[in-house]
Each structure stands twice: as structure tokens, then as C-alpha cells.
Image 1 (cartoon, rainbow, N blue to C red):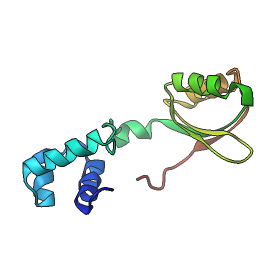
Image 2 (image 1 turned 90 degrees about the vertical axis):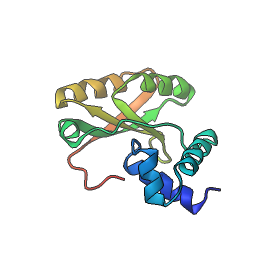
Image 3 (image 1 turned 120 degrees about the horizontal axis):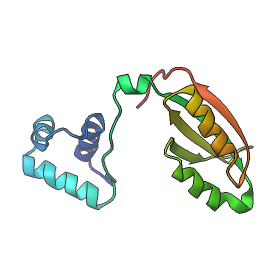
Image 4 (image 1 turned 135 degrees about the horizontal axis):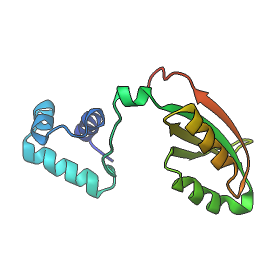
Length: 142
């Protein structure tokens, strides 16, 4: 279990993981060393796995994204998942219930490049069929 203060700290880090420890301490009304220790504890316990780059809106506005439903051949799921992981434009991969087995979130710098990636996914050994939906607009993202 994490404390209410830890939840507040995590919330601040989600907004900007590069916020200085001093600024976090001021926002939480805690000492700098206390915040540093809490961050270390959250990292050590696995609550914080790492830090990532968040793309700016100008860069993101140029990307084309799609959700790709993927039906796998059951005996080749491990191989298929490993091959999908090698495709850098597959930014997220989720196992799901229902008719399809996976949803991949794919991002590319043009429709032409997206089409090529979708073809590449469809041709992977172990992919039975796919169904893609291009994302037209993001209403909100958390």
C-alpha cells in the first residue's frame, strides 16, 4: 500500500517527471530529503518502473495513429508477440478478450508509412487476420 502523500507525489510526477525534488517538496509541504527518500522507496518497490519521454503536441500532431485488432494463431502467440515487439511503431500491445486476441496501438509519420506497417503486421507468421481503425482525433488522454 502507498500513502496519500505518495499518491500526491505520483500525481505530480505524472504531470512532469522532470520536476525537481525541491519543487516537489514545496508542492507537498515536505522536506527535500523526505521526498527524495519517498521517490527512492517507490522506485525500489517497483511502483515507479521508470521515466519516459512525452512527445510534444507539435510532433504528435504530425503522427498518424491506429488501433489494430489482431487475431493470432494460438500455437504461435509467443513468436507473434516477440515479432510485434520488434516493430518500433507498435507503441502499445494489449491482450484482450473476444473475437480478436490483441490490440496494438501503432504510430507512424504518414498514412503511407502506416499502411506499410499494417501490411508488415498482417504478414507476420502467426497473424491470422487484422482489423485496423485510424485514430482521427484524440478527445483527451490521461
